[in-house]
Each structure stands twice: as structure tokens, then as C-alpha cells.
View 1 (cartoon, rainbow, N blue to C red):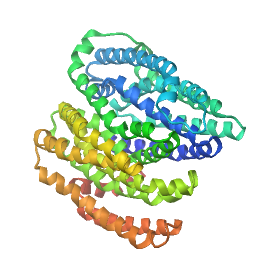
View 2 (view 1 turned 45 degrees about the vertical axis):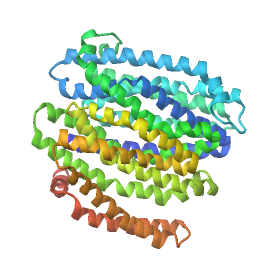
View 3 (view 1 turned 90 degrees about the vertical axis):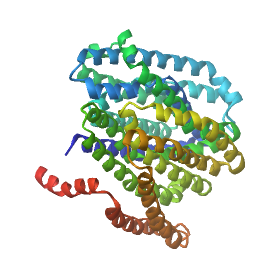
View 4 (view 1 turned 60 degrees about the vertical axis):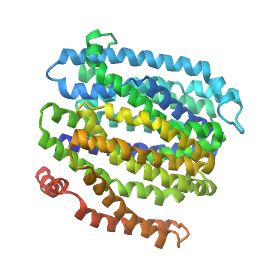
Length: 501
């Protein structure tokens, strides 16, 4: 089994377990503390994403790229790189905590729309939860270090352990009759313990002296060009990723935003394969590019692109088929009905985003972050106004469709440039490849939805039967439609399994 395959498996398994564990606490919080507290917790997640993305500075991508290419050849440079990144991220974490403590009363009084929760309680909750954004940036640095070495089993074990501890503490507190402050403290404590685990593993792997924050001018000068572009990309991608949710927090009650935030987080958790493949692809692409092995680089690209275009369809289709029963169980029937269409749009948009993630990683690996940078910059003037109008007109459904609209813009600008300037392949081939996967997905899962799921009244049996039958049909067609590179790898798997057995 190759290192790339092993890392994809680690990432997929880890994120699957985190998804399953997260559903337990969500149900308890929603039913025992109410929808306003539920909304505040998801608002903290959005706030964390906004602040950490602004201050991320493109450093994590730089660390992955540089560690994967220079860990063995330039150990002193890698040590200085990590120490400089540590300085930036720990300082940024402190600044985030200070900013949240100062602005929490302003946010709950002048931005979010509370129904039952008093502003003082909401502000205190946000302050207690500030530990989460405080550790997010340093944790991202250590994760980047592990990814650079293509040792992704490490961060996934820690993430699963942190999620398990967080859910266990939350459930225990609620069963004991604890209220919102204790729940927030439990979430923060679990994240702090997870951060300590990251520090211990990184220290043993890279050396404790490597983790000591310090500043290296030569490291900054060497990486300023790539890191600067990645900083801009990170901030702009964040704007597009969180725009709908930020607008909803202003235009809708915090409880309604909480529902949409949960649906969005569930769809994002379904990116377990997309994220696993993309995270494993970047250091692998970077290593092959530095070795000037373009033949293997393009072969690996084609395999991973096939894997995402066909392998992720059952996941996102499964989210749609599972939406009604899962939302009904975790929330209630009314919420499930409201969230069905937004979830379908979010699933389609996230699937489309996965289709461009491998070209995106390819562009970064060959040193062309300027392409996604220009794309995200142009999208500010096209996508953001459309997002606002869609939400004003269609509410949650419009928020979901805005994500699809953003991906259509990706397809029209970024994909053509990457095909022409990086991959050096015909654009029509890329579009035809994606269209085949999407059309076959619509033919199989769409038919099952219309013929089985809807007539059954969205019963659990009808939804399950429709999904299983559609998945069998889709898999049969996908085996025929995938390219020779991935087919060759799949043919080798049985022999490899027998050899290892």
C-alpha cells in the first residue's frame, strides 16, 4: 500500500468517526439547552473559522509544501520555518482571545438575533468558547507538519480522541443537569487537551527545540511570495465559504442560523473522502513536482480526479437521502422539512467543489497560487452580490444555492486556467469527465428518489432501499466510466491485499 493510499484511508476513517461522534452531542444540546444555545455554539464555529482564516497567513500550506520537499535535505531550514510559524500562530491565538472577550457583548447585542437567551449569557458563552479559536491556528500548524511528512494517521488519531472527549463531556454535563456555561467549559477543555496531545506528538517527532517560537528573517524572505498569495487566497476563500452563514446571522434569528449551520456542518463532514484525498494529494504532488517526475504526477492527478468525481457521489447522495430521518432524530420533523432543500443544494455545491479540489492542489504544488487568488478576487464582485440577493429572495434555500453558484464561477474561470497553464490538457476533456459523472449520478439517484423515496413518503425503509439500489447502479456504471489509471490501481488491490495477508 502506497503512502498516498494509506493517508487517504487515515483521513477518511478519522473524519468519519468525528462525524458520528458529533451527532450525539448535537442532539443533546438542541433538546436540552434550546435552539438559541444551539445557534450560539454554531456561531462560535463560524467566528472561529473567520478569525483563524484571516490570521492563518497561508503558513499552513507553506509548511506542508516545504516540509514535504526539504525535511531531509534542509533540516535546519525546516526547524527555523516551524519556529517562525509557531511564533506567528501563538501570538495570533492570543489576539483572537482578546478580540472575542472585548467584542462578545457587541456581537450578541448588535449582530445576532436572540429569542430566549439573554445577551449576558450569550456573551459569556462566547468568551468561554474562545479557547477553541485560540488553539485552532497552532493545531493547524502541527497538522501541516504531519501532512508534510505524509504521516496523517497522527493528526486523525488526535482529532478522533478530541471529538470523543468533547462529546463525552458534553453528554455527561447535560445528563447531570449542567447548563450552558458548563457545556461551553467542557468543549473548551476537550480542545485544550487535544492541543496538548498535538504538542507532545510534534515534539517527539520534530524535537522539542523545534517547537520553541522564534523569528527567522531568512525564512520569511524565502517564502514571502508563496505565503503572501496563499494568505490572500485563504481570506478570500473564507469570505465565499462563510458569506451565506454570516449574512444569515444578521438577517435571520440565531436559532434559524443554527439549523442552517448544522446542515452545513453535516454536509462538510461528508467531505471525508474529498478532504482525505486533497490533503494527501498536496504533499504528494509537491514531492513529485520537485522530483520533476511529470509522467507520474499527471497519472496521480488523473487517478485522484476520478476517485473524487465518482467516489464521492454516494456520500453526497447519501446525505440527501438521510436528511429527513437524521434531522428528525437530531432536531425535529419541522426542522427536517425546512432543511431538506438547502441540504440538497449544499451537497451539490460541495460535490462540485470537490471536483475542483484536485486541480486546485495541483496548481498550488506547481507554484501557481496566483490562479485561485485571481479567481477568488473576481468572485467578490460576482458571487457575493448574488449570495445576498438569493438569501433575501429564497432564505435558507437561497443560501444553499449560493454555494452552487460559487462553484459555477470556479468552473468558468479557475478550471480553464489550470487546464491550460498547469495541466496542459484540453478543457473540453475536463468538462466532459465531470459531466459524465454528474449525469450518471442524476440518472441513478434521481430516478431512485422519484420512484421510491417520494412515493414512500420519505419513510426510512423507502429512503434506504432507494439509496442502496441507486448506489449499486451507480457503482456498476462508474466502473465502466473511470479512466485507465484508476482502473489499473483498482485491479492491483486484491493482489496487494492477499500479499499483506
